[in-house]
Image (cartoon, rainbow over all chains, first blue to last red; front, side):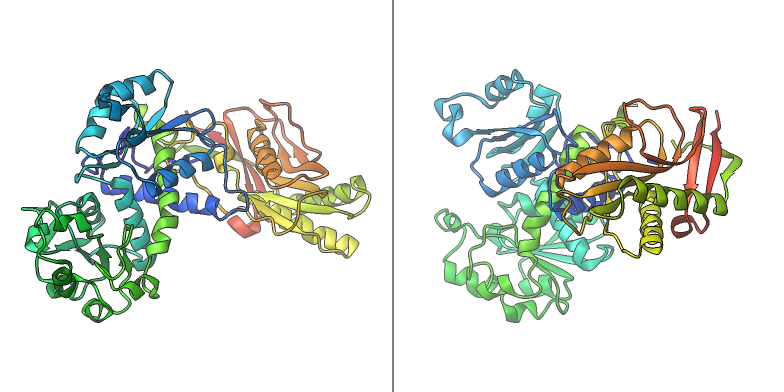
Length: 314
Length: 184
């Protein structure tokens, strides 16, 4: 079996700062392989037999957790779930004590989601075991960006020189941050667009604009982010109708982008808020494919963190 | 990390490969007492081409086109941590019901037996055949598991430092079995 030109992998997926283009491409190639497994009548292989994976969610999330757990189970890993919202953290236990407790159970890899940025980095330092960031604060959500890249590549072939518009609440979005980090690694130019109050001061990897038309014009793909209605309470938006009037991605406005430009949304979706409802079922909408691809991408990441990086250890 | 190989000799030529496969096809029919319930499953990559040949030969001898499937065993291997970074997972497609069938599993070379072991697991995940035979073009020895082939094209004693390459018309443009030496 030749593995000559394949790169080595970092022992974690916290964000993309330690990742290079060949590494990402190799990871996405594995995801393509995993899709093959998911197309089989028996969608289970013994690749991760004997490994135990913990999903540690200090912030509630059902879909991401299910996607990760299924990904691990499809490869025969054992899975335990810790959910902070219903567990000891509400009783005052610290992140560290929770993770130390799990460590005693012989966990081989941790999939962590937290409301605070940096928890996953810290967890990797504490545990010294593969850590997979399933979303930390506003900072990063790398597997979402990977599945977005995977979905875009399926549809566009290559991201080289492509213009990808991200529209919505950029400021509070870890999805936007991770995509701004990842997509340029694959050659794309990212433009992030939203009202000034929902844009960060800067977003490494992306150009920022408040002009929706400028963002969408000639875009090869459009990614729409959820507008959290609670932002209104903090006075970041004057009113929902005003946001809709200026920033909702509608069929008409999508006409500014390239013909049949794929449309992505990380979910959950507020129909008729950030996106004109009917667009979710439009032919260019890849929303459902994103969910399916999420599983293959997460299988690939787990595979590489647990078995497919032996060469990097010599 | 690509191993350097040098060519040593040609072990079987086109005619010899054809004769070996012809004999295996006859043996399979004989052992199964006809074609009843018989099917072939080829293991990626060369096993698929060889299984296809066997299906054609059986059709020629018995006038019956038997079902054939293809099997990828990559993620069933017990040495995934050894094979490095990029797993090569290919299609598994068994377009018929395996339950109650007599399956002839086809691979090019039988060596340590680990591929055959993985293939048995992969196959059994998909159904319950009434029996599974193993057919290989070359048995080169050095088994690490208690596995043997039911049908063997050629037994070739080899050294571990050698590599047996099976070439097929479909995959390599010619039918041959070659012996190569790993350069130290």
